[in-house]
Amino acid sequence: MTKKSAQPATSATGKRKPATAPSKVSATTRKKATKRATPAAAATQPDASLPKRDQLIALLSSPSGTTIDAMTALTGWQAHTVRAVISAVLRKKLGLPVVCEKTDQGRLYKIAAA
Image 1: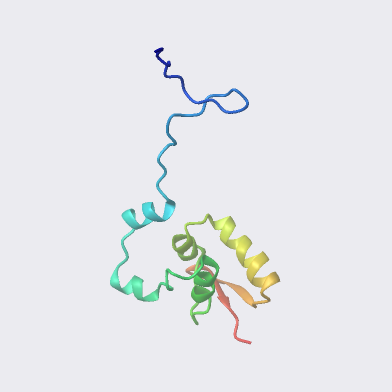
Image 2 (image 1 turned 180 degrees about the vertical axis):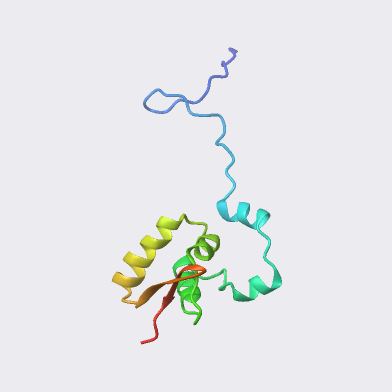
């Protein structure tokens, strides 16, 4: 009886595979662990079970509008990604009349009443 040597598994190309895959923690799990909403802020946040696009639409539908900072905090996206979704998806694909107004608070985005 011969002993088999413990060699790492290799793929068809002859490259070694890692013994175990690195443990990844999802972005939503990290956000839930670090982000705690106040009761007042939780009431203004859209339903978390909705897709992010629908959450953005809910934020933009409020009469007072919303800022880029609020949208990035909600989605976890960077500001340029939020602006791209507003432009490409909401305005062009869905045909929503999203307007941007300059105020003393910064730029406010909202869906204009038709």
